[in-house]
Image (tube, rainbow over all chains, first blue to last red; front, top):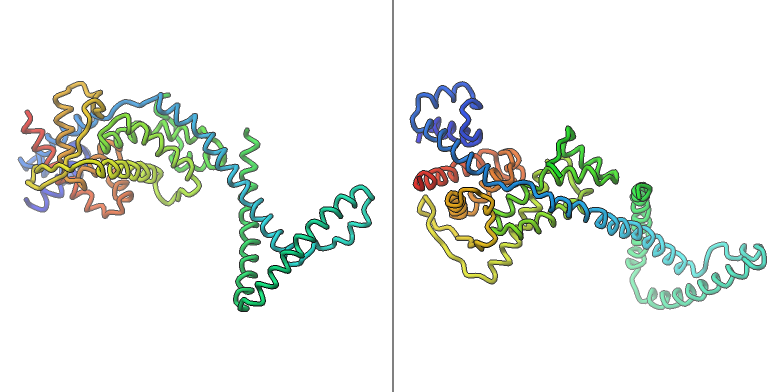
Length: 180
Length: 192
């Protein structure tokens, strides 16, 4: 087949045999070429059949899909909301464990008696946990190369950066919650 | 619900949906459900399964909406999701079936995808004989041609959209559809 005929027929297929949508030169060619004219006729017939083969819109299915959308968003929102919280907590835990105590804990003693008691109890618990963790980590750290400490510091920095990034996205989720 | 009639483009609706409003996405569902289900029903050969896969495709698109890159068309992204779901379904089916082959209009062997007559994706077609002929002709095409025919005529994608979705040069899309249509026209002419 001539290259010109193939190009014209490819374009005829694209316009579903509608000669009026072809370029002027190609329209002229179809008028003089039996092969291309037959293709145009065949494509119009084929297009008519294929178009009618597409079933009508399914309103029941559309309704079902739309009903499922809020549930998907709620699940996503919960996950997204928990992520920065978990990251923040992990970071805090690492920091507290690394320090072995809550910074500024001694200042809590100047608070009113009832609140100071509660906070000091919590501080004591955290301190105990921190001290125990630090003792264990020191034992492990002495047997590990300096590269490990560097990696651990890097991990904390990454955790901090991840917390900041996740928290920034979290603010956008809060905007959605106002629409509930 | 009627098919969505709105002046908003797909990308504008996606942007509105990302702000937390579900109505714009519902408009997209109305806009694409018919074509998506038509495409999937031809791909998997089962209208009920196609409806389930359509639902899954829309839910996945909704869940992944923030990852949608507006550099591409929403339609190609959505149909790529649907296409992957359909292909996964066909692969699962092939694992438990024996493949059959027949020769297409060019004398080449193509795999036959058997469909359950009770779940005919063209069951709504008024002319049952013609519907059956169409179905056989499309199923008899080589997989690469068949896929493009489905994307063009059932998914309603333009040549440019098909090229984008398949990461294929536009000329290749034109050429393959040219070959596919040659076979389809020939087989339909023989049926008259």
